[in-house]
Image (cartoon, rainbow, N blue to C red; front, side, top):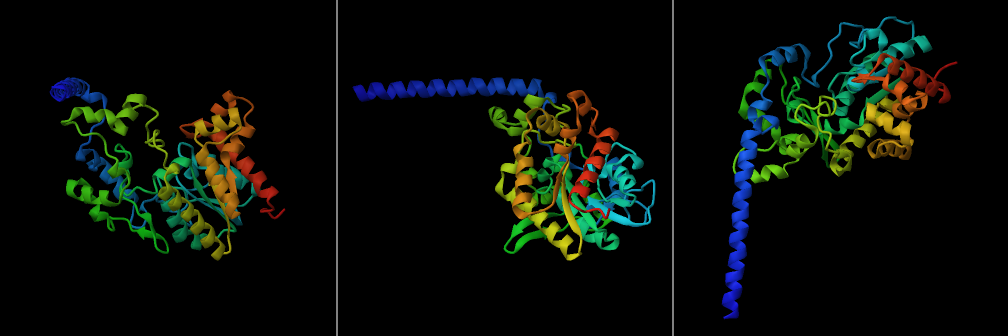
Length: 379
């Protein structure tokens, strides 16, 4: 009799549980049906290249790197105001090395060149990952062969070294495919750019080709929620929670910080890839007889934290600690900008999306002192 009562009790609880699930599922269905325009849902068409973007990619296409800044200058570097008799530094990296949003004569390289009276070449490319910057270094540095060479990055760049197709990482991006490295038995193994010819860019309008690209892309495997049954599971999707927190189209989610809620500096394999790129850069520069310097560029929040608390983000500190452990030369722009700012108001003037004109001047001055302090200038 007691066992029968227990069975009825358990059955009752089970029915109540199922009823609650059904109610929650119905409410979830109604919520996401009515609010579907406020969140991003998985759709293969998100990743298809638009015709207008395709034309832009054709102009920037590079079979090795995926895309690259195209300049008709002596070494293909960004144009500069003054051409000095001697060369000293060549710089590689992403948009922070390139100095997006300022003119050719307003980059930190241009200001530094005026201070030292020698050429400082800018090989930075917007939206490049550290892997692309390294590959560009191996291709272009042997032609310029400056005494000093830098590899620049922001802490977000670790997200790019596990990416094959930019739209998987940030769907609104107009950029295309890229090479990436994966851990192998004897160090990193290069997976070449999936598109080898400019005529193949039209493949980015084929959904089946897009799915093939996803096989080697970290971000393809962390997709947006699918608007289908069971709707309740959408609440557990990371991207939904990110948009719930920041808002769809929020300024916190942009081309510089597409994944503000992700931190791959806690992912062992991603960190291994990034630090192996450091190792290869330093080794190869040494083989060329050059002095390598790793430059850590800041985003505004990085410098604010350093200014207020005199502490770097853990990811930035991890980069610094690795460089110190390996005895690699490095320059921390976060510390440089925080030290130069007399107030938060002044610090704010150092940024305008990317680093502003005044911010680039400070970096040039502080890096100039770094070169002097480390006996890297012949004075």
